[in-house]
Image (cartoon, rainbow, N blue to C red; front, side, top):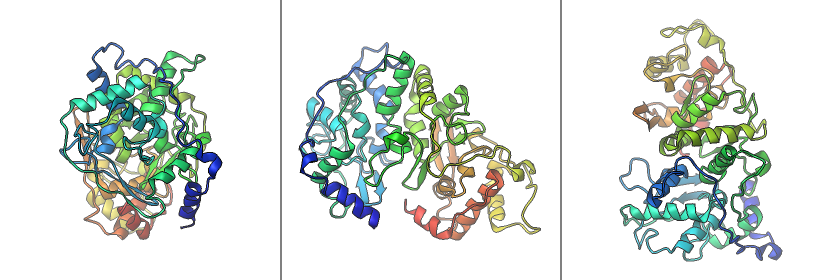
Length: 434
């Protein structure tokens, strides 16, 4: 409650001096660096489709499992209420079919709707502000080429004062700057392309950068990791222990393009969606450009840093078929649950079978004593398509109790991360609703 009150003060008590800045707008169009995926294309629809995928628009504006792409309705559960994504199809009544080019550009880059109302920054205009006008209009052209869907937006569920859109003007005055991407002449063209992909189109910082009390991004800690909606978006700075500094270029490229890097990570949850709907569709040179940019991000330890044990004793003492050691003579409840639900795919030594995505050794999720992502995966499972692969794991939210899921998560952390798990049944209950 104290945190929410602080946010309310930030929104409502900034002062008249800041209010004069609320409607400022940088009119410069900006010049986007060259992207390999669209360099040879003169077709605005092809360019728009590529940019729309790079910006991952479908992940937020489509309810999973829905047959209504871009029609909105996806819930974003935040500390101050629930916000629902909007219909961005060309439907003139419920979508954006009646919006002009200028209105669309203003919404994407400034966070202001066609009716002049403020957009909540759950929509990442704070990153999209860096986009060039040409790129924004290419995205609009592609969206308008798709079938319109007559689906009304779902009302947000926000209490006072967070349901007052006008108050977002104060937030913008403090935390938002309208600006366009400017290439760094001291860096290579590849680096600039990667920077544009990461900071503008891909808006990586919206998930991976810590936020302050007002929920603005802490730009001085860019990409150092954050938690949101029950998931941990990990540290992706160049820190060799807590970030991705020790990953090879090929491992980084593999993770971005396929969602898996041997001995490091397998994507799931929100990051799995990014891989499925966005990153896997990037041209290889653009993936390489992203890698080049990420290599340059200053190392940060980040909050709640995770240290990965690449050789966890229990897993190394196990075979694929049998566990090698336990704390006592009798199998724990967590071990029994793992034997019944997990061992056939992940194996006791964590090497995995059927798919490389089932490998657990070196994974940061199993090295997190709080087991945020492990818990979410156990609850919700994984269902993603990458290339010709269907990567699937069932969720156990309806099968196991909060106590059982806590025991299983803590066992996974002990077996494959060599750490004492700290998940409680109460925390599992809370994460069920995130």
